[in-house]
Image 1: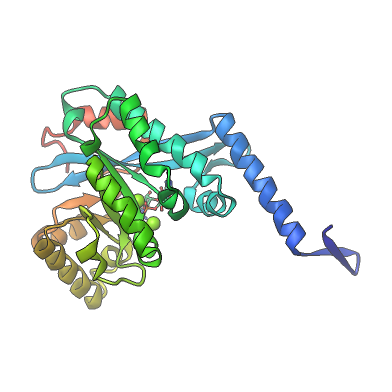
Image 2: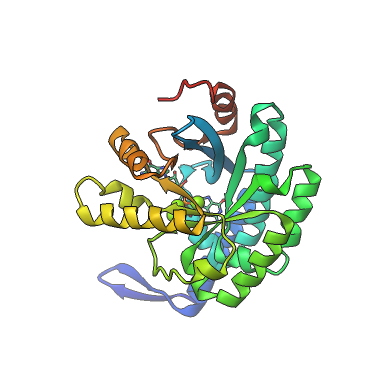
Length: 283
Ligand code: C2E
Ligand code: MG
Ligand code: MG
Ligand code: MG
């Protein structure tokens, strides 16, 4: 049904609705197959308290080990998974995997760490999402307070009522919520007053430019102050340089996630990192 226009022997495809649907179906099929063939993998990136040098937790970040393409970044396939709806199934796999991994790391050291997972809008707003999370917490016997669900501020803003309802349920369950990429979207600070969130994750762009751009510095200072006054945790994302880390410490932000302290790594490596952590060995 695709409309082909022959221009000088070259077929140009003009996407019509049918074709878009066909492409979507194709992508959905591939993602479904990836799920069946166990081609997804979670990587874990450390979140560090620079004051105590302790490992606070890990963020689970999905990768697609594609047989031909190699490791595919979530930035490439998560948007497609969202638009086709298969994110709901992938999301369930993520919850199962992350909790099973945390459970398997059954050591003294893993007792105090949290595991954060990312939930996209469609997944988070799905009415069965809280009970699904509950099911996997039970299955793996993980305490709800160990789990953090990261949502983005645009989701929170666009679906205020629905998000608020889900947040209330998670709150009752004892699962924490964190606002990802904070400051990157159309921030409306009022939702912080209404939503029970435990953590804000300061978007990487502010950290990246902090030494060149005085405005980034002002925003960071303001957000650190805001989080402190509202008694909400703050994690700075994307810290790559010692200088940035020191500056954040000086400003009173001690929770850091970034390449400086550790890249996202496969679970075996993350386990070794965990075993070696909290010994003041970190830079
Ligand atoms: P995010 O949740 O904001 O995750 C942080 C991203 O920043 C990760 O990219 C991480 O690798 C990257 N990052 C961390 N520290 C640094 C640093 O110091 N420098 C630089 N340049 N980058 C850093 P990643 O793993 O490619 O994930 C991209 C996005 O894909 C995530 O952004 C999240 O929105 C989404 N995503 C990842 N896993 C999942 C998942 O399981 N489910 C859903 N729904 N979305 C996911
Ligand atoms: Mg995240
Ligand atoms: Mg982020
Ligand atoms: Mg992001």
